[in-house]
Amino acid sequence: MKKLIIWSATSLVALLVLVQCKPNNEKTEPVKAAEAVKENANSHQITVKEILNATAYTYLLATEGEKEYWIAIPKTEVKVGKTYTYEGGMEMKKFESKDLKKTFDSVLFVERLIDPEAPAVTETKINPKNMIPDTELSKGIILAKGAISMHDLFSGKDKLEGKTVIITGKVIKFMPEIMSKNWIHLQDGTSYNGFNDITVTSLEKVKVDEIVTLKGTVILNKDLGSGYKYDILIEDATVVK
Image (cartoon, rainbow, N blue to C red; front, side):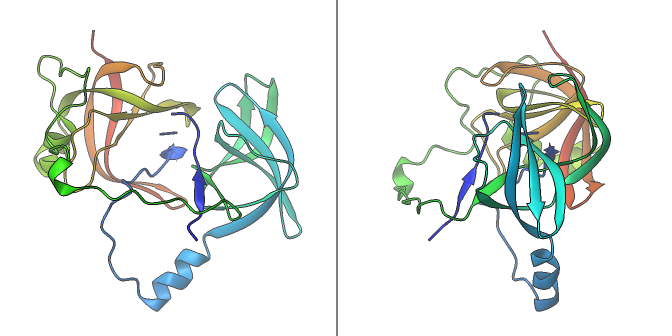
């Protein structure tokens, strides 16, 4: 039975951004035993003790064994007393939530929680004849002057490293004020080898489902620590009007 990943509306590091946002159909390589042990060590099981909802994030006071600490996830519906799992995370010390008017001694920003008790998701089989070409833009998206598609960005990333690019897409996720930046996830309907979602850092504020054009610098192999790595990232982007 597959576990259902709990997602919020909007693709924080990132990062949350900070989230490492890899496409669902990314190819995986065989994992050696030692690597598997390391990966499992990064998995955590927590029980929710308290919930604080802000505009963009849900803050959880979590218990893990004898430990108790705060976790922040993109705004999501969770339940007190329920057990969830997560992987990775980036710690922010002395983090101030302006919405809650509260400063946390430490908050662990996590991209998503997994509900171990969620029902299985039925897979929908796709007829290859009906698949949309990976170079076709989604309805309603028109590339701005000088902009490139996600397909061109991912397929030509090695040649674009360090260069300034313009991209147009729909905001899939927006995570504000993480490491003094806003984290934006864009898609335009095109893809390359399964990659269809680009993470962008910016001081600009955008809205989920909004179609925007951004201009920023292409960075490859960005390692933010705590397990958050980006094969490609667009940094310091500004809105092109």
